[in-house]
Length: 389
Image 1 (cartoon, rainbow, N blue to C red):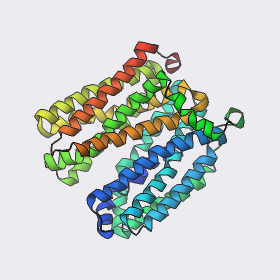
Image 2: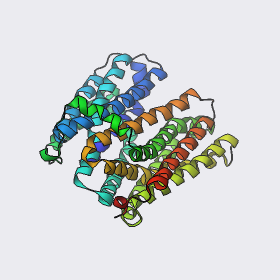
Image 3: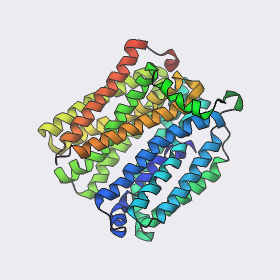
Image 4: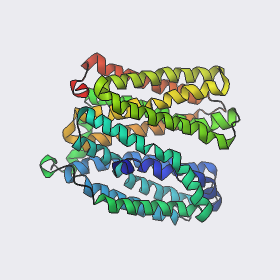
């Protein structure tokens, strides 16, 4: 259940990617306007997390996540009924506001139930299962499109939401009333300012957020780099992209096994160093064309695979800084990650020049930024005992 909730972001986007051209034709919209259905979703998803975090710290996890899924269902139905691209973008934002509850609260629920390396292991396991969505989503979406058209894709998402809503009530409440915060929500929202003044939390958050910026640049830039620049047939692009997903799954499984032995802070530093080194190689390959297509594919695979060592460890570290407000911290971390993702993918569009170079320098800068944040943790705080024991 937690994997399903955490995967709502991928499920809601990847499954409808094959339907985007058909949506544009049916709604008489340009490709750029259709792309806004993705951007609008990311904006809603990022902002929505900031709302659900404090709400869950006050009212518990199960009621807010159920409310969020109901909003997701309503948004999915309205997307299926949209008569223009403008209304579709608006309903995608609504859909994202609901879906964000499942993602942010699933992380908080893990922190409610587990601590230290147990939390890291559980997060790694959830992310491994969640990574199946980007692999299967486009395949399933293409089949739905061929059978029922693009509106049926959103209908299926509504059905998934209904099934998830029913299953949520089989889950126990993970935040007992004795651990909830009963201050007014207005005060709880203002506490985000306090999080911004917590250097250790910002370091963990920055390590993950910088990396997310690079990953979204990777997602936005590789179709043009592989297909347009290196003339890879579109049917083979999925294989190259899928290899990165398999790498992510493998490193998450490895992290789940090693974090309690080596320490999650050390695993985080290793992963961010891997991302920085691979990012620099990506930039060199994109700038000079060294190695041709494979000179770009191989370091990008290494960069994407660092996900398994960075995401779970950075989230767990941030949650351990302020465990009594895990909902708000999870929301803060998630909003930072997806906010930087919007920035990373946006930079690819702004500086697009028909070559892989914009993707290369964005991936390199974000990889180095992620490593510097992880290094700051060591220089200023040393090894975190709670993260090793």
